[in-house]
Amino acid sequence: MTSLIIILSVLLLLIIILQIGRINEITAGLRGEEETEVKNANSNGIWLVIYCAIFLIACFVSAYYYLPYMLGYGPHQAASAHGGLIDNLFSVTLLFTGIVFVLCHIALFWFSYKYRYKVGRKILFMPDNHKLEIIWTAIPALVMTILVVQGLVTWNKVMADVKDGDDFIEIEATGWQFAWNLRYPGADGKLGVKDYRLIKPGKNELGQDWNDTRNHDDFNANELVLPKGKKIRVRISARDVLHNFYLPHFRVKMDAVPGLPTYFIFTPIKTTDEYRQELRKYPEYNIPSDPTDPKSPPKWQAFDYELACAELCGKGHYSMRKLVKIVNEDEYNTWLSAQKSYYLTSVRNTDEDPFKGKNVKIELESKAIELESNLRKALDTSANSGSRTLVLDNIYFETGASTLSNDSEYALNVISKAFTKYPNLKVEVSGHSDNVGEPASNLTLSQERANSVKNYLTSKGANSGSINAIGMGQNRPIADNSTDEGKAKNRRIEFKILSF
Image (cartoon, rainbow, N blue to C red; front, side, top):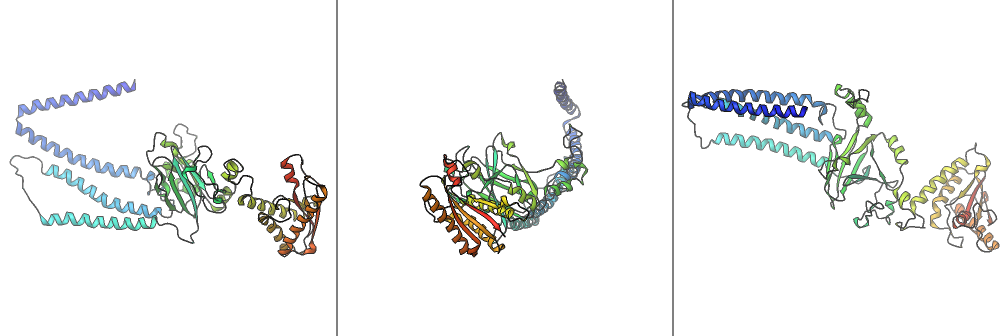
């Protein structure tokens, strides 16, 4: 019903305007053509001046009204180190263009009034005026030079790439219809290589090359989490159409182009909580965030940084919004430690894994860290004696031999450090086997493997008299020997702490 009334009202207004126009035509015919033109010219001139005044006042009033919501003004100062340069460039540009905007509109409407039609007024023909031509050529040229030079200086500062020795975090953002994939490097701090020919939907969305071990600790995140005060280098790419990586509050905006990787570097300087506290000072952000729910949290509290796509990349364009969190370094490290490698959780030992059935560096390092933690607990004076025997499942030998594999160094180096820290440490190193083969042969092999471990530790500085190496053969299994998994667990080295 409301829509019908609005439509009828608009139609009625159009009819009234048409009728007024017909009345003016009839009146003009009665009064005479010239008298009507003079009257219309005077009327139009006055209304143009009035319109100019209302228009300019509305421009300034609306700008002041929306100031708390505009980037670069009010509470929305840049949240990145380089953002102030961009905001300053826009402010200088606004100053010059604003002056031209106001003066041109005043001149336009004032001249329309001043030089309105009058009886007997003649037009002055001025073919050229060198003075005026110099003025309106030189002044714009000078202003443009200032803006271009400042823009070039700002561009060179903002778009400078990282240098050797810079401390930075490099992440990758890949856009497609309609999502962002955010890839972080793992402990090595390096992103692995990609190849579009390796892309497999549902298995390898980015085309990561799993032969590159740098990919093994990379992980994907559902939100962009970054530490305050740390330089961030974002690799930006697209998998299908043109997208745009846009972080408005950080003044970061760069196209994501299929087949042409781009980048952007910035340093966050305000955490999410700090930005919220700035918004809190403004009454506009102390109203309910949900207009339909008076009990909803205020706008400042509901605020979040966001990652958006600033290209019209399709009908699902809006769904590319991602949450961005800027946190302190401790919070970031806590979040980072909780993330899981995509390779280890989704690819490891599948048909997609080129290292299926083989040791990989990331697993060896992870097991070494776990061993270090368990060893620390075992050496705690409050620990009971039963917890002082460690099963070393990351000691590896050549098949059927006692020669240590290079992969064993990760664990053995952790053990050797314990002898350095505890000079009085005494241990028992025992070798164990599965039940494949003759028991006597297994006993001999287990003794030789225990001796190999002892020899390695003594070569690193441990006292030979502090290590008792014994072979247990197949006599103490810890798993079922009827399965391959059980046999693998039984082929082990145990490290028992006797005293320290």
